[in-house]
Image 1 (tube, rainbow, N blue to C red):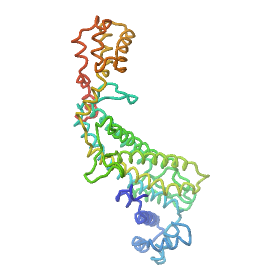
Image 2: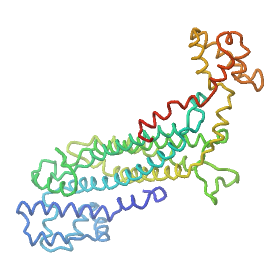
Image 3: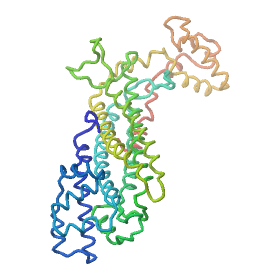
Image 4: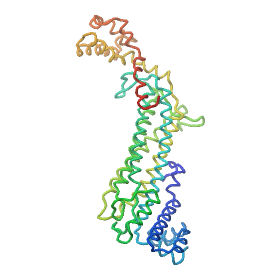
Amino acid sequence: MIERYTRSEMARVWSDENKLDTWLRVEILVCEGWAREGAISADDMEKIRGATYDLARAREIERETHHDVISFLRSVQEKLGPEGRFLHLGLTSSDVLDTALAVQLLQASALLREELDRLHETVAQAAIRYRHTLMTGRTHGIHAEPTTFGFKLAMWVDELRRARARLQAAEDDIAVGAISGAVGTHATVPPSVEEYVCQRLGLRVAPVSTQIIQRDRHAQFVTTLALIGASLEKMALEIRHLQRTELSEAYEPFGAQQQGSSAMPHKRNPEKAERVCGLARVLRGYAVTAMEDVALWHERDISHSSAERMILPDGTATLHYMLWLFNEIMSGLEVDEERMRANLDLTRGLIYSSRILLALVDKGMDRQQAYKLVQRNAQKVWRNEDAGEGLLEMLKRDSDVMVHITPEELDALADPRAYLEHVDTAFARLRLL
């Protein structure tokens, strides 16, 4: 986990202290499960509940054993008396590791949901504010037809809601534990202990496990992180485009003391949005690693372990940071509504070609004939054959067009407000109005 891209609350989830706290909680709950079976006395159980670990001592032992769970257990048992023999009774390391990992993943996912909800609210409010702010809709990067900035943001609201649903589904799938012994057959620990531990931890029991919980669950979780990251990248990329000098329609926040370039004092770069885009690439790489962790040898091997120690803390921390950062962008977004309107008129009426085409068809013209007439005049505007004149002026001088439509009707077609007629329908469907 890189400190630069890690929020403190997520760092705490993946700290050694929280990890070992969770391991100890699992171990104590297992002992309680055994006590319910009559295997551990009430007096011994009371002493076990007071067990603690020594992180420094665990690290010291691990330098000798090269085994983190054994080192942790020894650091705990050194502080106990004879009752320490009941720790890890019938377990294998993965029983503790995978069950505790599920707890940590749920903690991490809760933080992700909080940031996702916060971003959703920010974008929803901006969508409402700008729902009738006209701007150019672009396809293939070319001016197409008028839209509104709020309508664009409403799309993001809908996508963020899908992201929330996907995260919840992935969280539900990862919320399982397994206390099932060396190859998952419960030969050394009864299912009743497993059921007790999972119930106390707020987990479901994995219906069947080998020595580990199967990694398709973790792969779904990480690919969900990557997919949410891809959505944020899409949104951040749009901000980057709108901030380009040629457009200058929307800007990410830029602090009074901020500096954009070491060489060019005038620069105001979209570096925050670029950061979101860059980190999304990292998440996609983690998704590939998570999928490669699914296939392990027989009842288990350890090839997934080293990868997960990186991709799970880093993946959740990265997305958590991205959600926070993009919320900062959207909270401080500067929108130039006048520039949006100026850019709408940049192509001198070409954006109304579709409405004009449909009007001519409505007058009785063959669609292909009407298309060619409008296109013929649009090409003249593109080529700037009559400097400064727009599509309507070209059409009004074209007798093949004007026998079908009046100048007043043409003028009425070039009203961008006509494109607002059904915008609020989307907002109503999203229950934003």
